[in-house]
Amino acid sequence: MRAVQITRFGGPEVLDVVDIPEPEAGPGQKLYDVSTAGVNFADTHQTEDSYLAPQQLPQIPGAEFVGTPVDGGPRVVGLLASGGYAERVAAHPRMTWPVPDGVTDEQALAVVLQGATAWHLLRTSAHLAEGESVVVIAGAGGVGSLAVQLAKRWGAGRVIATASSAEKRGLAEELGADATVDPALADDDPKTFTAALREANGGSPVDVVLEMTGGNVFSGSLSALAPFGRLVTYGMAARQETKPVPPGALLQRSRAVVGFWLAHCFTRPQMLDDAVGELLPLVAEGLLKPVAGGRYPLSAVREAHQDLLARRTTGKLVLDPTR
Image (cartoon, rainbow, N blue to C red):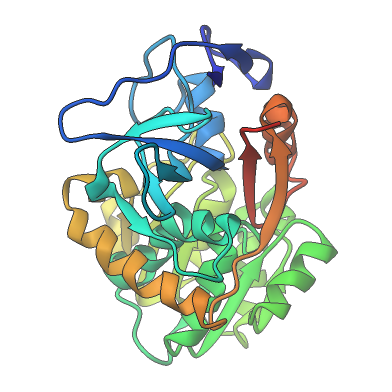
């Protein structure tokens, strides 16, 4: 079968499309023919071996797919430890969910990993309360575009999104953001970014920040928090060190920093059921609108990663394994 394989660590250049033997189903697993594979920013870390868990070689990247069981059955969307960039995958049925009629492959893939992340960022980690202000860093991205919509749906008093271009900021506003901020303001001085976030919130500190960049964006976001505010960090897109947070900086304003990684939900499948079980019906009813970011042939996987790293994309990117 055709698959994307990495045999060395590095950038998009290490992603090779190869012919390899089909996977074998392990204990409790089933084989699925893949119609669409999801691409996530975390995959770019995976190819570099720069993320939270050490990676092994050789490896097929990819943590999600839409497909059908090879022995017949309905279309499902599923999560994987790895192996998604391929024509066929082995997955545990417990980590798959039926895709409702009328929901596209792209929409289902947006919900299962990025949507579940947005759901848990707001519900499990931030404990969003009605009327609170929410800052969504990268509000036009895969997680961010859904988090903006969910925060508004769940009663946030004001939603502020950051995005790196006027076009992306416009998209975030279309999705429900009340105000937008250019994250480039953090490049030179996090204090400038702090001031911009507070200005966007009517001059007041903010209650919740969903942050996935690190560096000055993290520092500026933390300083923007109100007493009892929560910063939830779920990524390291800037690929730079973030200054340690001294306990006194938290105590002075009763602030909290919370980390979230969806992988920990894999050992608690009910947490995934809670999120995906609510989100897929919302998509089917047209009440939640995932942003399609582009469908790439499997043979153009390097281009997909290059576009992600260059911040040229919005919403959900996917791969077509038939091309």
